[in-house]
Image (cartoon, rainbow, N blue to C red):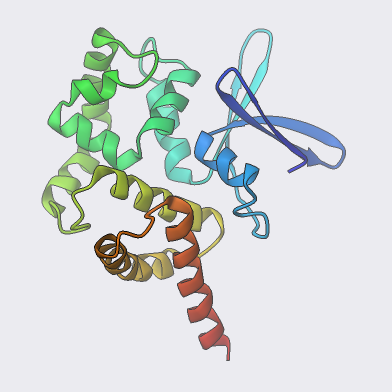
Length: 217
């Protein structure tokens, strides 16, 4: 990535491909990580959605295929544009959106910039149909996946999973490491340590890299 910048609450990266520059809008979480050099030593994979308008070609980059597909589903809803879609993914994780749909949490949906009461009703109605299988699966799993009730911590855990996937760690490795991170969170809470995304991501990567070095040796 050649350059990163912010314009009117939009976050961009410039990718140089054989001398041709591609301007890609990304989520603010990825922008922050790039800006603070948190993932500068790792290869990043972006899933790109190309939107062609009458007078422009727009590119949107995501760190997982799930985010890209979710973005595409959002855009298929009448009256919902790309910036609303980006705003939803900036504010909430996919699991949080699905849970908001399941519980019809209009207040949470309306907290996203650009979404009013009518649009929140439309989003909940149409996304409930589009993500029927995901909602059913989440109901079956209940709260077994994570036993942490703090929504901020769950958002951090979701971001950690997506970041580790974008850094080409294997899904099996990530799945195995999450229970360890959850236990570490409990310990950090008791000792009143900082539970920031950066600290927990670094902790997860340390465990994963350690396991990888043990296997290779």
